Length: 194
Image (cartoon, rainbow, N blue to C red; front, side, top):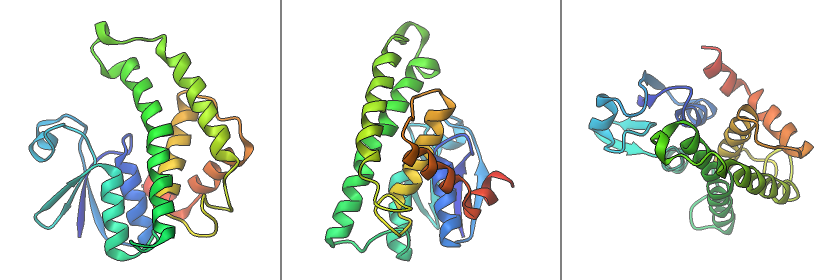
């Protein structure tokens, strides 16, 4: 059984969602970031942390990719053109959506107050809106790459939900409908309703 350390208000929800989609057994060990227990496993203090036997894995995307490859679900096979395109999309979402939202969060409540630049949020919102408009034009089906649910779908859905919650602009109907479909999935509902 996998053990996931984190909580539902962090990127740990992505890992839990992937585990639920794959039907894999896991235990959630609810911890907040930067606690002593988390730092003992991940010096940065970030969650999620995945424990697979004695192995310790960090970073939600790395964990989901490991699980997807190990169980051959939520992914295209490594070494294929489809996988290269999937990885490119994953990295694009991390760069153009997740990183933008994370930078805004850091300047809202994470950095020491004297290091925060609240005015940066206007440029981040502009950048997010531009990135959303470009990606919206490329959605190929019910999921980002067509008919199959993949790791980048979970990451983007989580980012879009995060964006809506912090009042970042998501004006593209196709992206809002995507987020709504993803957040209606039984796997995620089981996590959120538990």
